Length: 594
Image: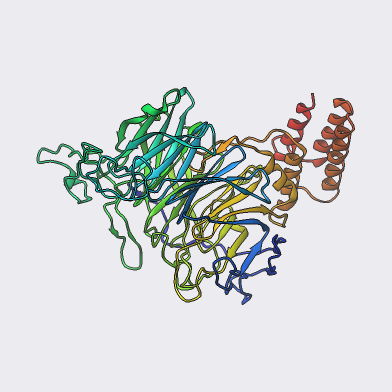
């Protein structure tokens, strides 16, 4: 186990841009530039409290719609997307929203099936749902039964959603610690099956008629405690990640096919990583690594990143049934490694720290900027190398639970940009293209749920899907939002990101995005070259003139030769090298014209 995080924080001072226009008649707050050397308040600070009438502040993103939860649904959790639908997980089941018009999502269906957490994922016509607590039952009943009852269920449910408004449960795979979260993993070489990695963080269940073979010989977390007198590993239902195999032709036969030991020591002990405890005076006390909270798979590069309570780990998933740990890191400022996101190139990982468990106020003035934050790691030769921290920069009150939580990439060509939920810290969008210097470029926030006490709420998840940001608000409901052009992100970059479309999306099953050649992509790279100073003055003017003329020719149905002549002139007059993003995009667009 290695420790590569430096003792010093690299905290980027914030730069807040002008606020984008908000929909729904919301009072707008004007954001002014603020740095560590000014006294200008952040517009997110001091917002009025309320359930559905709280004050709001935004920069470079607009709220389009806010859908309130319907009865009997309680705590909203994670999101998954398929086609024109967003599936909003909830501790009491899930709700299905039609998002074909992002400005006016509509509730298309609900499914009551309680069992805690309720994280959801999709694959084709299948929906997977995590269950870890009461009243989880095989029949989706709403009344808890004793642990010895054969109806008791903890694990992963599998639904057929070929008729999405009428889900049908086809399988329920029991696991020893239930499922706090799960990850759908594709095998590029296996089209007949899909795999589900189960992250169970609850206590080990006792052997019952519902599930046999769960063992927990000791609650100790040390390497030695899980070796017998002869130095052999002791079996345990802790320190493992279950791998479920789901045959696509017969999902009812889904079953656990491996109990992967991703934390194993050289001795063979399953308890080989962080045993839990303090990192020293003035540093965090970090949870023991006996499970992963979240695993993000990136099948196209054969890797996964596990946020595993006391460690961040890098995993080889080239054989999905038998994942193998490649590297593990810990951090003296992380309390609980919670989730992970790769950049598109697979050269970086953003790990989150859920300091306070999600219910604590951890964005107050006195809270360190590198606690309850993201840690950004570069991947170098299969190893994780610490680069920087990023934390939502606005000071929040003691009445707002706030800490790093779930997010996803926004597919802007040539940049690493992530939208992320911070519970009652709202959402923050930041650029980590320079992994050592992440910077916030947009945000949306509401005031606290209550002015007098901490009532758990805020965004559980905020994800980008097919042109918009969608968020599941724990206590309020389901939101849709739209990026607004700014000095940080041009209209062309937003348009290019929106051109990348998916049939389905789970944030924990990352796809590799590639943009088809387009004028929006070309113009995005030109905007970026202007922003970084590599293209300016007369050259910039001429490049844009030729691109605009080429676009007019395409619209008029002109011959490809005429279009390509304009694009070739744009590349030549840029003065940039052939391998530059601008010239490469121009050449790709020209080639696409025939």
